Structure formats: structure tokens, C-alpha cells
Image (cartoon, rainbow, N blue to C red; front, side, top):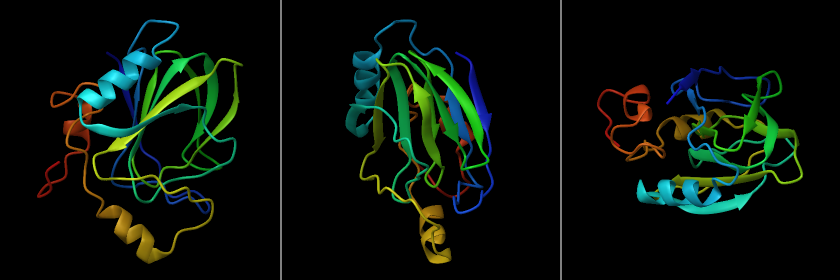
Length: 169
């Protein structure tokens, strides 16, 4: 499986996450409807709060949770990394793992676009649409790492890429 790492520094009012890169998993599932598969895989690796919907069409980020987005149906353009971030053309089967603080928004999608999202155990998304205080960003940096990669579990690329000395999942 092809997994791309992309690092984002702070961008305007979006803090992003200077410590952890975004992971873009290309073609996790080769199917027109991977929603069931993403929900099953995320849950099997301990990710919770599974939801199905689209992605908001305004720039936002989460301070209280890392987030995984699996494209179950359709295709779209997601702006990741804040107002000056990078546009990703995503399609059914693709998956993006966003570390807390990473800006994201939907720039447009097919009528059938469906995303399956989830969060690490014990974390909950808080929708942020303005600049975070220095204290909030410091708290975000202390957020516990997920126990397992949402796509491949204990052997997944997140386990090495997001490894931080002295902190375990």
C-alpha cells in the first residue's frame, strides 16, 4: 500500500501539527463502496466514534482528537493544512490520517461523496474555526498517540511515523 507523509507547519490561524505528519493512504480498498470496510477496519483497530457523512466546506481543525477520514464513496477535493495547504484529489478507497490541529475542508465533491471518520479511543473531535491560544496548542501537543494505526493496526505506518521517544500509544 502506498502511504504518503506530508508535514504542515502553522498556516495563518490554523495550528496544524509540526510534530506529526499527515498520512495519505492511497487506494486502501479498490471498490466503489468502501464505507462498510472502513468502518469495520477502523473499529477493529480500536478507533471509535465512527461516523459517515461528508467533510465540512469550511476550514476547521480539532484540538482534542486525531482524526481518520476514509473515502467510502465518490470523489472530492480536500484542502488539507490550512488556507495555504495542499489540495488532495481523493476517491473511494483513499484514506487520510490527520493529526490533531490539522486544518481541513471540502472544496467540492461528487453527489455520492461519503466519508467514514473515526477517532482514537478516548478522544473526541471539537470543531475549531479560529486561532488557538498558545496554551491550547501546548495541550494539543500532549494529546495521547493512538494505540494502533487505523488502517493496518500494530504493523501500520503510523506506528513508526508518529513514534515519539518516551511516549507509547
